[in-house]
Image (cartoon, rainbow, N blue to C red):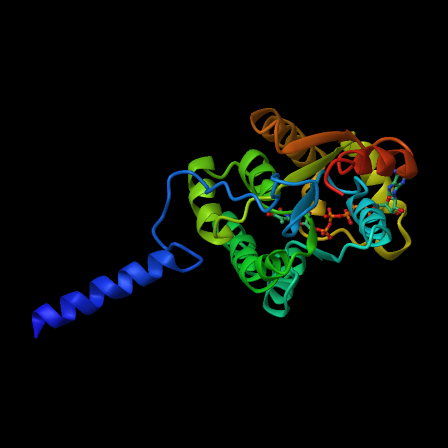
Length: 252
Ligand code: T5A
């Protein structure tokens, strides 16, 4: 009886290992690239992320890049973090706009972003990439390291572990870090019609916090220079768009 149960348990564990997400924690995030480099064409989808301080122009560039891919006959999905699926969007509302008497503690903030990411990766990003689509995501886990790690001071090793658990091996093929002075980004968001006078919880964290975020992003880019492309975002949006599309000249 006990022997039969042991065999069943072993078979179940082997099956789980074969399934998409290996549940055992890994020390390093799995490098899983969706860009097949064996031919000239993209065989499966691509996963592209945009990062940067507030008001860097990510949304603007993502929209232009998606139009660019569509003009080349590619299917493109635009999404964002936190958010991207119904549950993840509910978490976004809490983490950005919670305004009750009970404050969100820093540890819970990390986990809310991670929970949103876990939903998003499994229910939207991976299925779309597997269908051969190009997924462009407005922020991903680099934001967690820059905001919650470098700026809020949360332990980086803990963040790596939590991120690894959330992303299921789904590492971006390329990340564009739109870099610009924090003051320039603030000025842009403060004069944007929809957001005038409406800073959310994180935007309202102050200049020093956001300077630390920017430094954090630049440190990440140094550490992962192959994946993270630092782009000067303090220039007109068309020039920046042209610089970004140059990167894809060899894969389309
Ligand atoms: N967060 C997120 C974490 O703390 N941890 C995490 O793990 C994650 C995933 C998300 C917040 O959550 C935090 C970070 C953020 O605080 P959000 O609403 O998604 O918040 O906001 P942001 O991602 O910060 O995006 P923003 O709306 O602030 O700015 P964008 O998208 O970078 O910029 P965009 O394109 O909307 O442009 C801003 C304004 O500038 C103009 C645009 O027309 C617009 O008015 N603009 C330019 N002006 C001059 N020159 C250019 N080149 C311009 N490009 C755009």
